[in-house]
Image 1: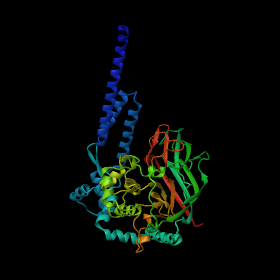
Image 2 (image 1 turned 90 degrees about the vertical axis):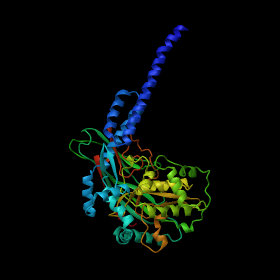
Image 3 (image 1 turned 45 degrees about the vertical axis):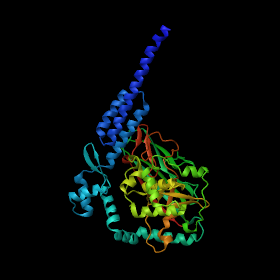
Image 4 (image 1 turned 135 degrees about the vertical axis):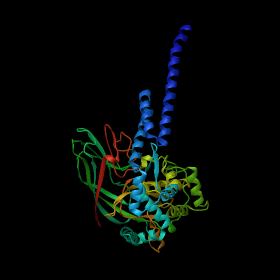
Length: 481
C-alpha cells in the first residue's frame, strides 16, 4: 500500500499542475477578451503572444486568441479615420460643421466611432452614412422625392408593375430574364509568396428554386473546378491557382442562368394554422445563434408592434412596416466584427440589407412564423450589387419572398407600393438559402464573412485572405427570353 501511495503522489502533483496551468491559460484568454472588447488591441496582442508561449498544449485557446487578433485587424480596417479626417469628409458632403454637431451626432449614434488603443477612430463609411441617416430623419420629403425621381427606383417601379400584371391572381414565377454574368476575383500581386496555391470560392447560382433555373457555365479561367451541390447552404464554384511573383492571381467565371419574379397578395392568402410538429416549422422558428436570436430587447419590440390576435400575415405586415418608419438603410460594418447583428440594428437604428434581414427574421421566428434567409446579388443592369432578403412560410401557401430593406415604392396602388412585402423582382441571383453554412470543398481558415457568401472567399496554406487582399468585378448582360 505504501508503494502505491508513493506512486500516486507525483501523479497527483502533475494533475494539480495541469489544473493550475489550465486555470492560468483560461484567465489569460479572459484578459485577452476583455482588452479586445475595450479596444485595447495592442495589449490584447501582447497577451496573445504570452498565451501562445505558456499554453502551447491548448490548441483551442490559441485559435480563439488568434481569431480575436484577426478580428482586431479587421476592426482597424473598418475604422481608419481620425477626428480631423472625418470632419474633413463630412464637410465635403455637407459644408462646415462644429464640434457641437459632431458631439450631437455621436450621442445620437448617427456618427459611428470607436476608441482603439486610446484614440477615437471613425468608421470608413461614417460620413456617407451620416448623410443617409440625416435625410431619413430630417428630410422625409426629400427622401420621398428621391424615391420618385431616382432612375433606379423608376425602373424598379415599372418592372414590378409589369410583374403584378403578369401575375394576376396567380402566384407562379413570371417575367423570366436570361442573365449572363462575368465575375472575377483578383488577388493582389505578392499577397501570397511565389509558387503557393491559392484556393478560391465564387458564388454560383442555385438551381433548385422555382424562381431560378438553368445555371450553365460558359467559360472559366481554370478548367479544374468544383461546383458545390444544390443542397449546399452556400453554393459556390471552386478553383485553385499558383502564384507568380509580381503578378495578380485572377479567378474568373462566365455563366448564364434564368431568373424570374414572383408576387403574393397577402390579402388573398388563406391563413391556415401551422403544423408546429413539422420539421420545417421547428427548424425555421428556431434561433440560429448568434445572428438569429430572441433576446429580451427583440422579444419586447416584436410584442410591442404586434398583437396576440394577429394572424401570421398581419404580424409580418406590422413588423415590415415598422422597419419602413424606423430603420434606414446604411452601409454596414463587416459582419465578422459584429458579435450580434440584430442587437446592433436595434441599438443603432440602422443597417444594410443583411443586417435588417437578420433582425426581421429574429422577430418573425420569435413570433412563431417560419422564415429563412436568402441572398446573393441584385442584378439590374447598371445597378448590380450584393444583396440579402428572406422568404416567409405561410401554411397552405408556401414560401413567400420578402425584401425588408427595399423602400416602399412611389405609388398610390397599395400592392405596388408594398410590393416587396410579399414579392420579388426578376433581377436576382440566389446563391445562399441560409447563413453560416459549410463550404464545398471545406474552407480551412476563418472566413472573411462568417455568415453570408456574396463576394467570395479566398485562402492559402498560410491562412485566410481578407477582403483587403483582393478585389472583385461583376459584369451583367440581360436578355428577355
